[in-house]
Image (cartoon, rainbow, N blue to C red):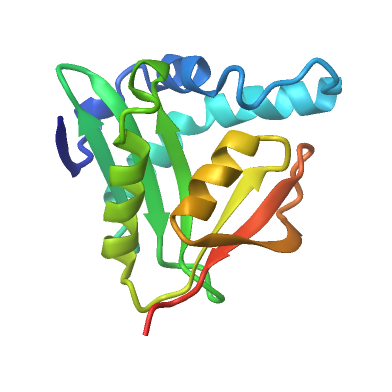
Length: 160
């Protein structure tokens, strides 16, 4: 597996990659029409978000690649309160194989170990919540953003 900074060519057909990767984690049978539309919106902005992250100096976009895109993560240093991990998407084919862990560790290193880091995770995505907890993130007890599907704010405290 190759881990590196993302390049424009990594994100050709990224909408299909994201759509395939987030199902079923972002879906439940009880989602409202508005919530389903929000998931479609996430897919629709994935290419713009990835390409923008490549261009921005305050963003890092890292990929895992093995003859195909296995996953990517976007880290953003621009928020005034704490830098954040904004996207972490891994193909089903590579889930459970350490790809998400390695990408997250790389993002933490890119941001800086001595920085507190925040992220939002869909409140019903128990697998993701447990994953982030293993990497030192804690549920803040708060909801982040104005999403139709609530995101739990998780924070990894700065190391000393």
